[in-house]
Image (tube, rainbow, N blue to C red; front, side, top):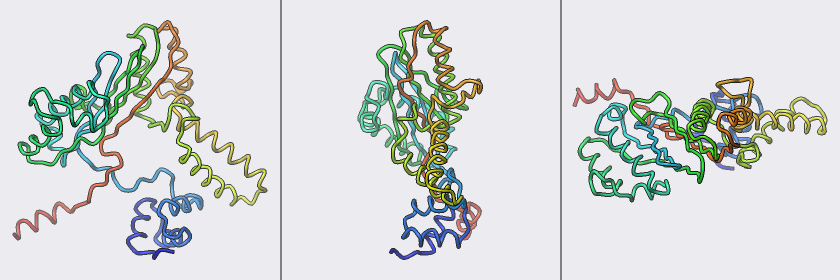
Length: 308
């Protein structure tokens, strides 16, 4: 068993909000495995499933851009929100998104593509901007979606400028129907995705490892009831059905009309579109998601600087 250190206990406390002794016991019970310890605490009802490991703190902007039946969403990070409000930075991010549409959407392809305004690669253009603006920046993520026939609707939540914000969504809809009506329902679904952050489009597409992890937690929680195994199995199956309903896009209650599921809302939209609609893909990028920023005491920094 690995040694349980104070640093590990502190990290687990920050991730789960559980007490120090509970965190220490969880780590001891799981041999120091952080993820297993989180699940152990959840199974005991001590930690919440949605507790995040610290704040998502990277600054910058999310941008969307579309061309025909293809669209992209990109994330470009900066060190401070001050730079994200800079016109030059906004122009750069918007330009990178436009360049990304002509690539396969991967970060490597976008970084290597030529940025028209500079005649250099996107990567080198970003380096030049770092020298000019004086702050580190990087192209962190990029996703492209396309359809042969249909639309890829885009949505920026709380846009700070045209096509720019801190949360961007793409929704690919396949259909031979009216494109304007199709884009309208696509934008509504994109708004729904922005609000609910589904893990997959359909229940069967939820990552198997994620589903298995949830099932194991439910099993441990159900065993605490003291009921026989056959009853526990039914309890767990019921909770898993609810889990899939909550995390799969098409089975979620539509935020614009909670009386309908997203699947039912899309089906109803087929009347206006004039043809069947298939939700073929989605992408949701939240600025700084999964990135931890070192917390600093700004007042202390200023005081230290004054003391020189």
